[in-house]
Length: 202
Image 1 (cartoon, rainbow, N blue to C red):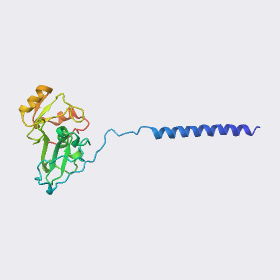
Image 2 (cartoon, rainbow, N blue to C red):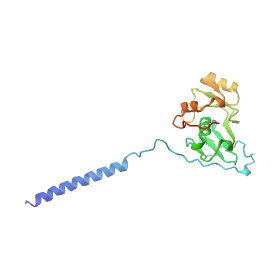
Image 3 (tube, rainbow, N blue to C red):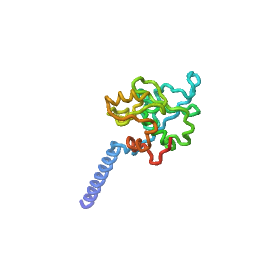
Image 4 (cartoon, rainbow, N blue to C red):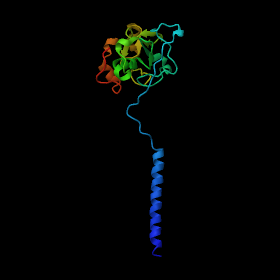
């Protein structure tokens, strides 16, 4: 009888420990994974294809599988907002919006290590309204409108000329901006977590 009590007590302790182990293990399996504050998306360049019939630095159709190197989304899902950049060697990158294009240009060291601004041969944005490509440095942009961009936040819709931009502003608010007005500080206001303090000059 005296031997049986310690055995029963030991059995109860072991059963309790096993129950705790099972519960903790099961909870760990079903726990939500911890995601980092910032996720890095690898967006490979789209090389130039001579068979396309296009000039090396001409605007290209947005490939279905291309990902924005800034935010990781697929620009082909929102073609009316898409932008693109072409390097001198023919490599192209596609963006979900003009905003992402300007963030990329201001942060080349972050998003394109080893590349320099001098290697950029051309950049284009979709003109709101007609949907055609227009050189990014010739386009007119609207800052602060009520129209959300593809990431459901305010964005920089692009226009072929100031008249089109003013018509858009009459309906949706905002103000006209030229590329030179889109400073690192303004980009920081729109996307603070994607802009480095020490941004490149463009």
